[in-house]
Image (tube, rainbow, N blue to C red; front, side, top):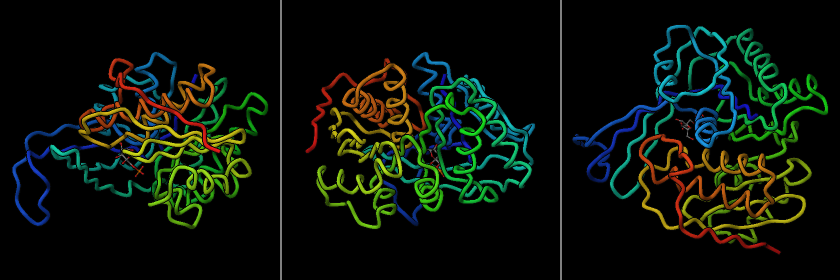
Length: 313
Ligand SMILES: O=P(O)(O)OC[C@@]1(O)O[C@H](CO)[C@@H](O)[C@@H]1O
């Protein structure tokens, strides 16, 4: 069983344009869609669609319209009643696959609500193999929220505690790497650059792996570094691997990283080795990028093209 936590869910609105976005102009849109989003929700949707048992923990006010979008996602959820309503995030996509994203901060959580969310994660993760903590933190949670959640889960479940994956950014990611020692982090190129205090924009796979090694394995068990159209890297104590994506038509990149993480966790749960974990991560990320809006891929959506994986020195 796999548990995800989305401390800051979002109703994802996607507006699809028939041409490139013209900032400052009025444009007619071709169509629009809404999806229940937030990183942990997206991970849970891909895992559930693959037939694995999964619970998505989230704060949700009674009567929040987000509940209707969640119903459509058909997820098993553990909801913590809070006062504030779920934010709405906006994505604008065009026929060339260019995605523009506007994310709101989310409603503030009170100290009691923060404590209730952590208690819910501890309860939901009893017997789980993986716990995925994903997304930005809402105001009020505190930068150390994920560290607190990880400590609470590990203290409560001891040797039976799940492996913990964290996908976040900024001070929340810095805190997790400084004080949490997650089993897996999933930075993208910007997040790894910020974490390591260097830029990886023009670095090749070997150089990126070396940068990840400044964190792995001392401060995180492994790093799945997603690089968009360049593929992804997996760095762990035993080695580093790079994978290139299969050819796809990009429709919306929203949720591609979440689906990569879902693919990784699915493969890990099934006992796959590092190269297969990385390959499935890249296939899931590519599948998500080829779907509109924040749709999470099902196994039937996975691209059939080759995903070459190479071991790095
Ligand atoms: O503000 P955060 O939590 O960093 O990102 C939120 C978000 O962009 O992440 C998902 C895609 O990864 C979307 O469903 C959602 O809108």
